[in-house]
Length: 170
Image (cartoon, rainbow, N blue to C red; front, side, top):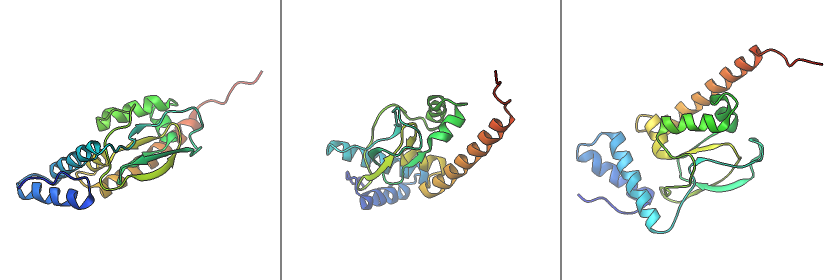
């Protein structure tokens, strides 16, 4: 059965079922359905942001209104900095390799309507396809895995900072 060339949630669900009925694994079916939805939305001129959010404001200053795909995950700036040993770009590059995504540009299209958010410089938007990949094909499980990653990196960063020598005084 041919796939529905729409970006709606209903179409994505139908396409996943179609691909699974054709013998694809759930993770493959989800990836295919999301890819079809992105292409359909791009054809309509839509777009959402994914990747590293550049800027010069502090990482706790949510002042960038952007649209992201439904199901995307935002990695906080402090976590990227922790992964990059104090360098957010290095942390984002590490995650870029992990997720196999371009961290420097907006791309893709939403599954259904875009989700408006207000983000901060130095954060990273992980698209739902990559989130699902982290979760073994399940976006909700991917969110839980990424939540655990954020907590792990924060604990590790705090431990590292506590072990560093104090600044020298004159």
